[in-house]
Length: 634
Image 1 (cartoon, rainbow, N blue to C red):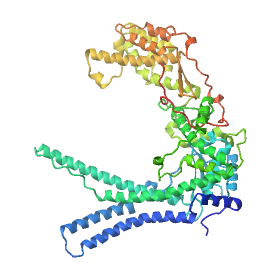
Image 2: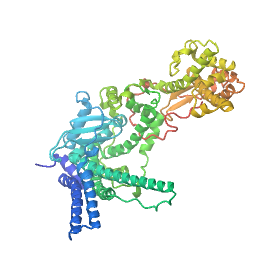
Image 3: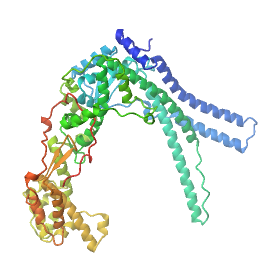
Image 4: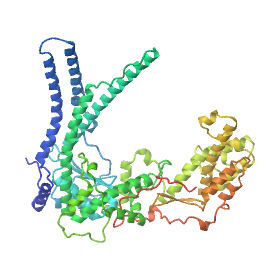
């Protein structure tokens, strides 16, 4: 039985030449290496047991049972028990390959994507995968469920990141797919199960031994501290400090950690050579320059996807809001379609790659540095192939991409997240703030209703607030009316009565007199600020808009509105209070006219944005300022 499935003709020759050029061992040698390292793990454990048995025989050679001999027997039994319990009997969670959530479209659902993959597999000279799974992120990988230690081929699975489909042109996606299929052609995936078993066993054993050693050391330190405390309580001098005694777990952890480092060095070195060989396959299929361009773009695209998910797709997490269906991952195309963002990211992708200094290289990396891989490709002879213009986005390979993106959301997001309310992109920033400020202003509106009822004032509609103080429960008061009614009560001297009904901190609850009044006034001013901002948002005085080219949210407010608001709030809580400046400000009479507002850029809705990424999709986002919610101008 042959251990490799050799491609025929030119594909076979090119594939084998690529392997030899990068010094990748053949499949039989790699199988022997992995199997030998896995068996060596258990042989090492048995050698430790044998060494303990030899020590016991040495101690018992004269037949006397001295104190030293008894201590040696007990010590060897303790070490042997640790070896048997931790190394030979336990099984770690890393013994198998982790499942990656995603969507696996059938050939009838995505015929063009399957046709492209099968055509590339034929050109590479290997068997195509039996499953294509679209997963989150900008990554691609392959697996094979081989049996009998990799001797018998199994089902093949190709994992394709959705960000690659959104952000890559189709010719660069061909380079990515050819690279992954090159791993199949070189039988790199045959030993995946063995490698996972080896790495999982080594890491689990070393981690367990270190945990046990640390726990034993912590327990010994605790006992020493308790003894010292008892001596101090008895008026005795503290005991002499001694270094903690190292138990058998500590020394076993040193032994097996060293063996784990040796195994990882050997297997990761082979893995890096396999990546070089797969790059050469991609260059042969898709072209040298196209493969190098894909390698430049993917890390940048991965960072862009991370920025998008963190600051756009999840910007409404605190308010329980999501973008439209299919846009949790698909909205990345809107980010990449922004002209300013696209120009910045294209410049980054085409710029010089940072050099990797020797100190940053690790023998435990599974992939070589991207700069090294590109240098190897650029050293190849020019194949004369250039990109065909216009370049079609890879997302065009999908039939009904919105449906697939929606299915991916349901496969990846948990049930609680999927239950969040969907909001159009253009409304999302304002709705997030509306939900937050309504929640924070709810206690103030409830306190206003209680104080008004206690004094016999009629506050129609306010008593029907829910626990969040939602605005649609305010009856006929309207947008500006609820704040105006509150300021009327403040003018009638009910400020401290309302403030006293607000939730208080523990420190504020213990205070009295002037300190209690200051705590109450501070709490009232904070809640009043949220209600004022909510009023400014609802009346259109201020707007919060989505921005794809800079910070995710852009606030549009009248000139010097922030300073005017703070001054008006100070007047409203002064003694005596003056509510006139705040009334004038929120009615538009206390700020500069509309012509002096910050000029906003038009932000089209998600429906009006292009459905596909540009012909040259950007990739690496510049650092955004301030996180998902930049500092409000108000």
